[in-house]
Image (cartoon, rainbow, N blue to C red; front, top):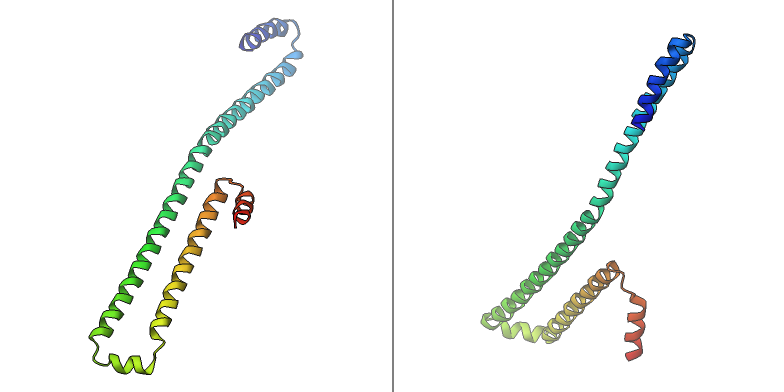
Length: 158
């Protein structure tokens, strides 16, 4: 293309000497070609930038997936800490009731306290299990796993 451009310039010089009124047309033509070349260069730069962005997208997606996994791990850690704190509180209550001098009065006033505590513990365990199941389903859905087929298989086994 550069060779054609240069040769067209030299031809134009020869033609310019032959026909002076054609100079204005050729100058306009040259200006138009220069503008077209600048536009083509800009388009090329834009396309290169688009390619760079397209190449960065998979890396960004991997980073986002990694962050999601880390956030999920932190949630799991927080849930475990929460459960541990609740267990410690229950242990504290049990110990304080054993040492408490008014233990007999409390057990006489409310005989269902131990049953209520057991039910509360079971309820908390169920809540934790449901939360873990929800998180597992979200993770599986994020990886494109066919959840419907898994659910149908589990229901068929039951």
